[in-house]
Length: 531
Image (cartoon, rainbow, N blue to C red; front, side, top):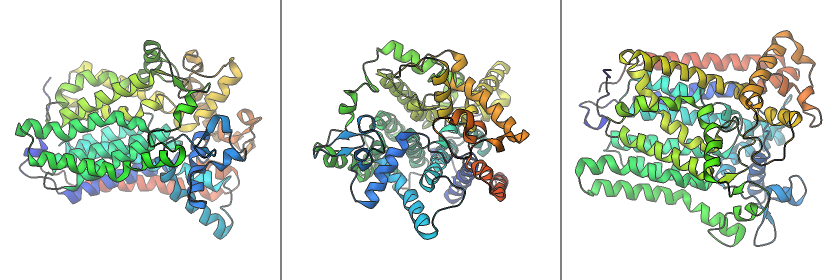
């Protein structure tokens, strides 16, 4: 097949105006943010996120990360806390997530103290916690758009690629639940876009610095971000090294700037460890691994099968579009920077898959292969070739790509209407569970895709028929599967407020939809940059 290749950004005779590119990326970010805000949940289902919120609260109120909630019985000290060198309880999670939560928590505090809370909202702090994840997913989608645009592809192709990554992968379900995997992924994707910008606009000195800072913050959030470091270094170093055939001053300067940027944020990691455990290298996970909890010890091959094919976590079950990669890779790699984006993405996805394949008991409260999230949008940037050259591709590739895209949509949508908590609670009623990895290989009829898909159809029917108004608007942990409106109608925040009695709330999602239309209208009317 004959494929149109974008001109190499570094050698293009006329660079697109940087301000216009920034405007385009900003408009894409706003459009995705509006979509994600429409489908956001205010329930904050996972104790993981609540524990990180408690750390944020204690940093704001006491100036330290001591997990007082574990000492007071609000969360289980034997599940969610580890013991520090001072005998106090601490979270074993990275600090980056709590730092991100702090502004939203402070805003919720201010509203609660100023006006006594927001009517019709169950919990102000959980509400604002739920509004943070859309920002992160919008960062992922806009970073995909920025990366593909910077590589020289048409705006329409870049926008379609961002649309698939943002609306047809686990990035959308995770926009409804504040897991730290999403923060890690968004920061890595921002770093990638900035490194590609470094090659597109070599006269700018700051992109490697900010890319390093973004990577460092990802590492502070989750230590597993270190698995992305080799891939990021390939993008930073290899295009220039192969072009100049030497360790030039330009290359060394960029590497030093990236390192300095990383140090600007990564220093938090050893300091936080020192504060909690008196050891800059101790994260607290060593204590957790001694319990009957997620821990290393899973044989590699069964672990690989779990993360690639299982009904609960399978990468190829939830992201079958990855099977299109062999048909796109060669053409994407013809771009001198795109080659290393591709190699870095594949290396990172393989690394995280192998790493987590040696762990047992992970991901029961995450929709799809959340622990592999960091590598998924990175590799899927190659989809831009599919859209750029669609008319010139072989019919078989076009048909295959369309089918795989449809399967990706089917796998994604159930997580948009309901929380993953529904599947875990429902399955717990249907079959005997003993914890750990038991959910990974449940029968496919009990997978989140099937159970949440069926319930999503029922939930939409409940709304259309008016039956949703008969359910409880405040969750009761003893009966919420049968009685809570958030599990029997889409648990979108404004739907919850609507059924709690404030009917004018419907104007907000309508306004957000209108803003998406206006944003896309202005974006598509901008002239394509010359290349």
